[in-house]
Length: 632
Image (cartoon, rainbow, N blue to C red; front, side, top):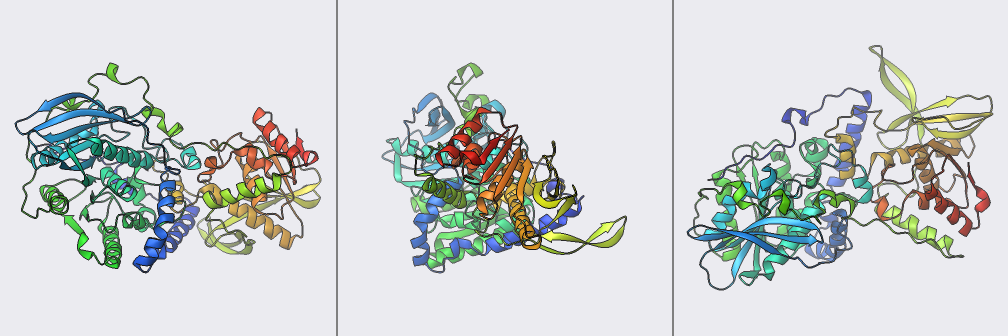
C-alpha cells in the first residue's frame, strides 16, 4: 500500500514570524483590515441564485484572468503518446504524456480496468506536494489510480509542474524573487488549471471514457487544483478537494500563506473572497474534505468555507449536493479520508451508495511508472522549465496614429485602472498630518507623521537648499537628482524598510497580491496623497522625482493625478520586469509607453540612454509635445 507523506512547504514554526520592526504592526493591521473588508464580498455580494447567475459570466471571465487564462488559450493538438504499459491481474497502467500547449508536457499514468464494456466513468487525479524526483509525484498517489481502476473507472493521475518528470517552478514569489510574475499576471496555479482542462480533453477523446461522468480529486496542492479545474471546466460533474483551500482570513490575517507556494494562489485582481472560487462549482456535487489538526488548512477557515458553501447550494435548492468530511490528524491521507473520497465519487458519478473499502495495493517502483524512462528521453522542445516566460502573453502596444493620441491614452489608462489599479481610488485623498506614538530609547514619544491610507502613516523629511519648496522625491538608493535653489521633500513611503522581510516566505508582499494590490501600488498611493497634501498646505504644484524604480513611481503618480505638472526621473529601468511591480501591468504596457502617456506634461529623463526610451520620445512627438520631453 503506497503511503507517502506529503511535503510541508516550510518548517511549521516559521508560520508565525517574530516582529522586529515598528512597521510590522502597522502593515499587519492594515492587511487584516483589508482582508475583513474583502471577506464580506462572498459570491460578489449576490443574495439570490438569480443575482448569482446573472453575475457568473462576468465572474468566470475575471476568474480566468486571475489565473492568467484570459483570453482562453487556444486548444492546440495534444499530441498524446503512450510510452509503455504495466499490467496487474485486474488493471492496466498506461504511461502517457500530452502537450497542454506546444512544448508544455504533462506526464501521467492512466489506470483502467483490464476488462470492461462500453464507456466508463473517469476520474482526474491531481497530485499534492510529494517529492519523488525524476519519477514524478504521480507515483506517490498510485494507490488511488489502482482503486478507481478496480472499481470500474478510468483514472488519469498527472504530475504537477514543479514535481513532475520535467520540473518547472512553483515558488517564484515565495523564495525565488520573481516578482515580475505579479507584473505579468502569471501564477503556476494557472498552469495547473490549464493542464487539468487539457487532461479532461484527453480523457473525453478516449473511446472508453463517458464524457458525462467525470470527477476530479486530489490532496493539498491537488486539492487546490481540484478547485481550480472544477471551477473552470463544467465538464467536471463531481469534485472532492482534500486539504487544498482556505479563505482570506486564514491566508492573510493568520499568515497561513506562509505555508503555501505560488501554485496555491491566483492573483486576486478583482478582490474576491477566496471561497467565491469554490462557489463557481455549485450546484455540482462537492465534498469538502479536511483534517482537524492540519496547520496549513486550519479548521476555523474550513468552518467558514463550508458555511458559505452551504448557503450557496441552498440558494440553488440543492443543499444535499455539498458536504464536508473532517478526518482526525494532520496534513495527510488516512484510510477514513480515502474512503470518504471514494464513497462520494461512487455515489454521484455511478449512483452507487454501497459501502467501500480503502485502497490496499502493492505499489509499483517509481521508476517503473516513468513516462520518460531516462533523461535522454525528455523532449528537447520542452518549455516546462521556462513556462513562466511565455504562459501569459506580454502586451504588444501599437503606437497611436497621428491625431489619435488622446483616445489612445484614455484607452490605456482605462486598462491600467481596470487590471492593475482597481484598489486605488480614482481620486486619492490628500494625506493628513497627525500625531503618532513611537518608542525611542525605550520610552514612549509623540511625533508627527502623514497618514495617507487608512492605517498607513509615512514620513516626509524636508531637505533645505535655501529656496522655495518645489520637489517631492521618492527616497531610495543611488544619486540625488539636481535641486539647485529649492527645498525638497523626501518621501519615505511604505515599503520593505518599514517591516521585517523574510525570504522565504515574503509574507507582506505576497499577502498584498491576495488582496488585489502590491506594495509598490501602496507606495504610489502614498506619493499621490503626499503631493496633494503639499498642494493644499504649501500651495505649490510639486515636481515629482525619483531615482530608478522611484522615478517610475513618480511618473505613475503624475499619470493618475492630473494636478501634477512635471516629473523628473534619474536612471529609469527599461521594463516593469525590474520594477516597480503592479499587478498585470505587463499585460497592458511597459515603462516606455507609460512614460509616453505623461504627454503633454513636462518630463525629464536623466541617464536614460537605453534605446527603449526612443519609444517614449516618439510618443511625445505624436502627441505634439516633443518640446516637453528632455532627455539628458
